Image (cartoon, rainbow, N blue to C red; front, side):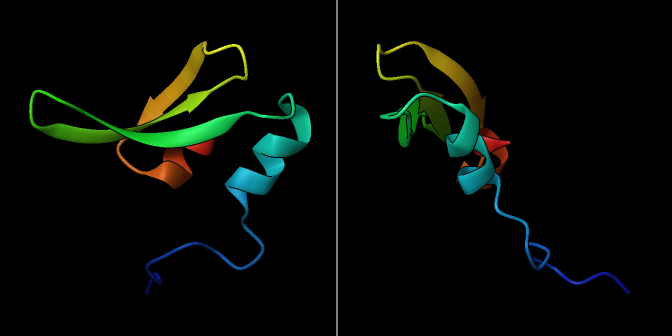
Length: 58
């Protein structure tokens, strides 16, 4: 049986921030009634998007 939720020790945000430039962020966005998350670099470029924050950081 598989457990729901993140695996112990799984830290996609911390792992991503270790290699991305300082100031990178993930923010919630809504378009056409659909909510998602976008990871942006400090210069404003969007590099990833997903349905939840954990997937966006991956």
